[in-house]
Length: 486
Ligand code: ADP
Ligand code: GLC
Image (cartoon, rainbow, N blue to C red):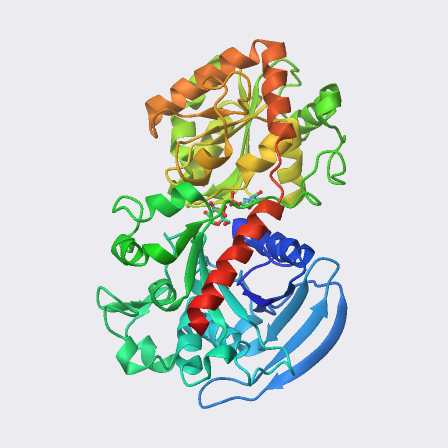
């Protein structure tokens, strides 16, 4: 199949979170299965891409839509289609926000344009000579209008020429909601502005549009696929998802084992594997030194690498932290996000400088060294569509403590519930009491060295690679194509 993987971010070129990792790895796994995959993303200013430029086509402007270029670059990992339109994508800040942290004012137009170009590549008149996608796979709200434009434009085509539209929800908390007037600018057909299409409480929702017009919907874990059909987790879209249940599948993310492998990871102070766990100690010592923590081998060192938002349950960590420190624990946090969490973490680090280290940067190298140097990873998220760090930490011998939600539930085996296979600690309840109980259970297990090593090895021996999940995506694509072609 020819698969167009449309995304606003892709590691290692541009990454703000897990979607970047998924976009960097899943297309490669699909290629390994023999499919022809191109990753469409904006050419953001300042982005570094190594690879061979294979060609470039001009996209003429139409009406108020700007002229742009599509540049094909074969990188060492994926084949990129860079959408170059400096007026929209070459500016200061990140993919979604300006330097001050507020959204770029024209995000609807920027990502509406990305979606439009994605849909065009699914038509026989594709701008890429001869390369018409069979499947246009849109990721999250920034690509959400792609399935809608595609459904509109393909309708007059003979069935055999229709591409399928697939959308993946990485986080339903982000929906791309804009004033309804935006629908004019985005040229959304009039008959698709109602509540059975993009309308959402008087506004327009790009994600809702994707859910209504895709041939298949996926999300990033089986448990989250169930959760988002409930009022508690659906962020207003649970009704739509209930109605579209027949086309919704939960597929657990994998991890890129070429990047996240402690035996070969070039970013680590010391490589190690399940058979030589003792070698891991050098990473712990180096991390303690780097973070100016007490150089104490026996202190249980906890870690967090995360966006610092209320989603991630960092407040639960802050609440229990004084007692954990009293118990001799240390904590390293790496993250960026909401100012109140920065302030609270900064204050904790100032109170306990030899036990708590707070790092507010986006630092890939430190993220890897935290996974390799800590004893235990903390991820008590309020909701977590999939989560990648709990998988990285298991692969790196740092058993995680996780909330019983979403992909966390689907990827961690509780070490008390299953003494033989346990690879971490799953909170019994998603609250402060559940977190405290899990931390106490982890302390108890850590005190028993043999038991702890068994838990570490169980995690390190698990297969979190992408291959199985990529096969599930292929089945979804096939079903979507069958639906599109009737
Ligand atoms: P989410 O996508 O909700 O942020 P995930 O666990 O799926 O959560 O993915 C987060 C990804 O971003 C992981 O690869 C994690 O290591 C990375 N990450 C998050 N914050 C930072 C940071 N401050 N520095 C480096 N990497 C980070
Ligand atoms: C989102 C989710 C996270 C998931 C990631 C990649 O950012 O918050 O749980 O792992 O997307 O799918």
